[in-house]
Image (cartoon, rainbow, N blue to C red):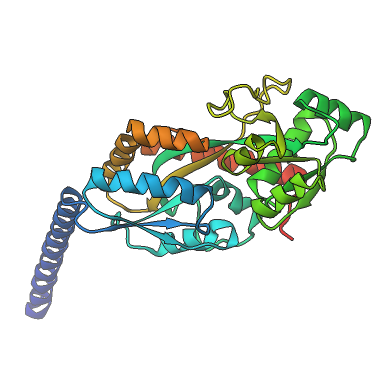
Length: 337
């Protein structure tokens, strides 16, 4: 071997060794920084993105939850509204956020519906996020106008079978949970109902009160006041058990349609890559918050059923919901208009 070749070989070895040493040092620095960030978390305000405008069911949950959660974590919870595109605008913003746990998002059932409705979302629902906690469920309430010729769900089904396509149902929009829940119910009950979409739950409920449509599967938090005021009649709730705020109203399953449970659900997610210790701190903070009796009582008054799950439990729930709603949307050939 020539002297020059020997020198080159020694130089290559030294450069390689230096590179490995530098890579190892950088890896240690990153690991140490992440560990420190996790142990120090949180040391500044946390932003909670809400994918819908103020005043809706997400807001009704986020505000009282945020007030208790900031006591648990020792930092302010700053609520930021980012409505639009069925929640996907806020979700896309979260996907672009730093994976440090200081920006999180409250997701609703639409989070699992949107991938089957929107052809090109700017994120991957299964890969781009870290589940934190399944916070609460909010059953839907099956409501009808007071003049409707049926007072129970079995009576409504019998009327629909005797008059195919004559009962119209309102929804808060095409592809909304209030729409897809009925599509699923139609198939299980073997009936034909005519869909009339509105631009939000508010206009849909107004149309229902005015007897312009004959049925709606609405969020219990928005239709409950109308039921209590005698402007609508409640036929059933869609949860697995009766709602504490309406104990006299049976479930859909009790009313003769087995294996039908649909809940509006709410949870917190973070960007993918957030350190596990940070996710765990957030999850435990939320679980402790929803165990507070005062918060439980307040949320129960709105119809919410608190959960407070582990990240793994919430991840499994999201996966199951993605599969369920993909099948419903495919079978019903639902498309955005």
